[in-house]
Image (cartoon, rainbow, N blue to C red; front, side, top):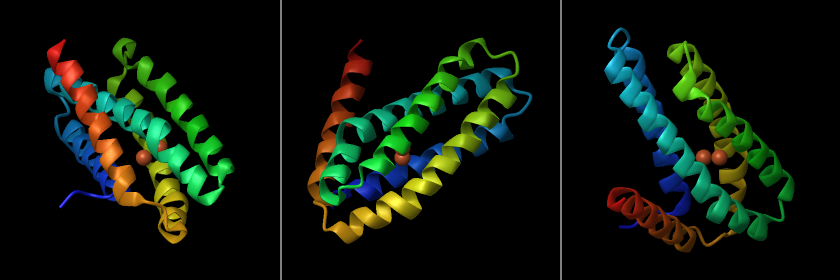
Length: 146
Ligand SMILES: [Fe+2]
Ligand SMILES: [Fe+2]
């Protein structure tokens, strides 16, 4: 069965957490760490994009909670600035640690505040989940076709 919007987004959160564990476990293996850092950053950027384009607007519409969306967008902006600096980072471990600390803080707020309110609002989570999946598939197809 298709996952609803919250299940999809939280699966991304968990995937990134697992990838970061792999990144830490690969300490000393520079190539493996670089590849994992790249994957984590790409996952985070795609995740932020589907939230900003699809989930956050649907959430604001269903709950009227524009403030949480503004706050979340601001945190995404800060994270994207940090992610953009990763390729030049001299201390990759340190750069990724800051990104993941901020990401998990952001994820915690999404889980405790937005996801809880979204469920309580009766928002069309299955429909929104379908839109997220379609958008993600489009982007992945474009990236792989490039
Ligand atoms: Fe987010
Ligand atoms: Fe998220």
